[in-house]
Structure formats: C-alpha cells, structure tokens
Image (cartoon, rainbow, N blue to C red; front, side):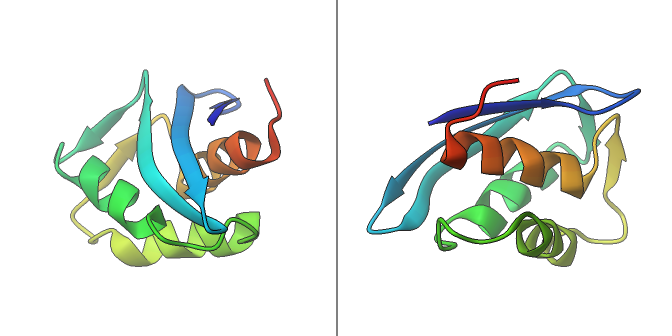
Length: 95
C-alpha cells in the first residue's frame, strides 16, 4: 500500500506499508524531507509497525510523537503529516 501527503508549505511524505491480520507491517516512511538524526526515521517506522490498521489519524500522530526524542528535529514534515500519509496508504487514497 502506498500513500502520499504534501505538507502545506512543507515537504512530501510517502508511506509504504502492508496490512497483515489487520495490523501495519513493513512500514517505510520516506519523502523529500529532512530529519535529524537520520536514525529517527527508523524510530518512526518502528512506532507504526504492528499498530491496528484502523488506528485513527490522531492516534497515529500520538504514536509518532511519543516515539521521538526531544533531540529529534523534523524539517518540512510533522508527525500529523506522516500520519496522514499512512492513513492514505491504508484507505487507498491518492493525493
């Protein structure tokens, strides 16, 4: 599954994932944004891995926020924007 979301005034976020047994698997977030440290992108992927496929946008956002250290800096994206790309992937929406 593939979903994209262009953050207003920001960057493109892409979410590629599978759903197996109603849970998110093989989650991979990418796009034309920057994140420091780079390893924080793996943290976002891991935070989404295994969540129920019917997790709301708000709950996805909270899961991402909870996983990120205060030292992580997102440039051009937000946890809510990542959550939107994930929901679009799950829901089959295209930008």
